[in-house]
Image (cartoon, rainbow over all chains, first blue to last red; front, side):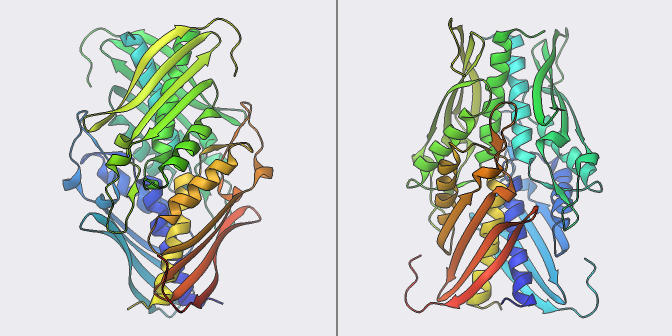
Length: 117
Length: 117
Length: 117
Length: 117
């Protein structure tokens, strides 16, 4: 059986895969990036075992097409997700590495006390 | 060749199909519905020939699952989109009809003067 | 009220917007492009008023990332959709124009006889 | 630092989150479910560290709407994904539990020898 540490890691992976494939392709511009960041953060925060989410969309990659907007690409997204299963936490990140949107585990740690989710 | 009236109709269809399939499946709750409405409206407003967008997500359909949230379903969405191609405008709507998320043309009209997009 | 010709145009727009935003972001390679084309064609063919769908994904744009695959971008897609509302048909297309995935009405025509959908 | 076992778990979570949010909302019927299963399996198989994917869509949940088709819901999907990082493997599953599409770790194990991905 998987322990709480492993479950926290698994849940963090789910959240990064989910947000990536739900929102990639959304029309976006520097003027609308903020509302999209908020919507992504709030929607992923609803999912089970999520303790914290931070989303940042890189405005500098938004080369305008002929109609004056861009679409959200995976490499525009920086997402930090912290999951918690009982007292086990996992902090994972989606971040551009060169041309690839890399997802990786940043840190796993124990946090005593009651989880807030 | 299609005239401007027909192009406005075509563009309105594109926008409704796009927003539906981009956002259905997003985790949502009554607390986060507002930020999702804003993100949908702002993203679709970026697309060509869009003059106005109004989005409303029906909170009453958000039956919570075992983890306390729902996912956006097509029947939760009411979306009004107005497109404009030169002086031809088309107002189209996505709205629940029974169990089906129906998309339909509400009205086509001419609007003299300069388009704001 | 919109006539059947306008409804066929509207439905064609819906289908192009839908397929674009449903499938953009899907992992794809030259080896899997064929199954993705089939799945897109069959799924869109289910939608109301669709008479014909043809999908082609441009393998030459699939630059491999560091892990050896690509993601479906809008500019990779050529999609021809024919809708029919009573005897009115609309043929519309999604096709790359430069760096933009352009959607346009190709032809509207009347086709006597019974629709097959 | 995360070990290979934990990385395999993380990758399995990513794949399940990704396939869920990429494909939910796709029009589907008993006649087209097979091509959609194939497209999902082939696309997810391209992603890094994937050793095996099995996808099954529950035809019995496809209640037809007024136009004769359904849309893919999370509860229709059973997905088994096996990831491998060096010699560490993780088998995870998405499967309906009541009304919820549950994702869980089935088994982690070591497999000596060269990975085939």
